[in-house]
Length: 442
Image: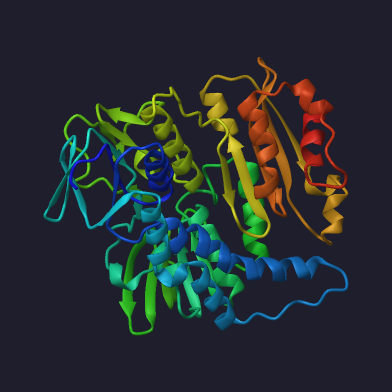
């Protein structure tokens, strides 16, 4: 069968949100996958990285709790559980499930010579609607002397077989921060090099200050304003040279300097690209008969955003007028403690011309903190649009902050008035009490 109602390119979270739902609605759907069914997240990103972080998180939590000894750490057992969580890089179960939904799965590199046509090897598929969900790939910078086969990206660092004795991590975004933390927790001596003036530089400066504390607590040596001039590979590892004359001779170099959309050969005439990303409207529509979801759109490189965009596309293809709203998408670094944010930063709010009021509350200001143990740090911050009296941004640093960031996320999404937030009664004792304190400070 080479004629379908919809062809989906990619089986990551975006593709999985689209294809089975349309098949369940009676559409004839084909899905094309060049690598593993499931995409980056379950095999080389979200799932293995969080699995590798968890043992260190537990040990760190134990250090703060009175009367509890520090648990032992067994790398081979950790590695085996990581292999269980990433299915041993075997997608057979996921492929079987996908086909059980009524979707036709084709494996191979897709090409889209024109709208309505997809080539997979010698197969030519046709459909009036194509959904591009091809994801992204790690960017390896062009540094003199660097050899791709001798450096790790997110794929190699989440599927490592042995823990290196030492490593340099380039980049302090979420991938760099999480990799640096779990490598350090597993016994690796880690140096993190960041070109900007502070780690996690796209978030508010207060968040970066907490990130400094997180990294220091885990023994990571952080160097900002660090410009790598060249590298040299040798029999013991790699030598990383920086513009200030520094030399870091380590066993492994981990590159976490961003990602690029996979669009090569997949964007036909009539579909616009901006900075390598597919331009879409609020419906995730790129052109007549062509849609895009996930990392290829450049909106936000998160699994939950790809799935959300996929649901928006499904609604529109089934005749419902759905439009994506990205005002309240959470962003989390799953370290110990977790670092979470949602909505605008102060800089973004100022650029948008909003008159902002802000409030910060330290983690120690609620009783829940000391039930977790001694010497914990963190807190929350909120941004209020003073003209409308609603939250437009928030951040949190603390135990499991990725769970309780959803309270301000929902407040932003629903434009909950400040008076309601002040009157909100959270359970005692919980970290959610911090949001009530922040609202009252506003």
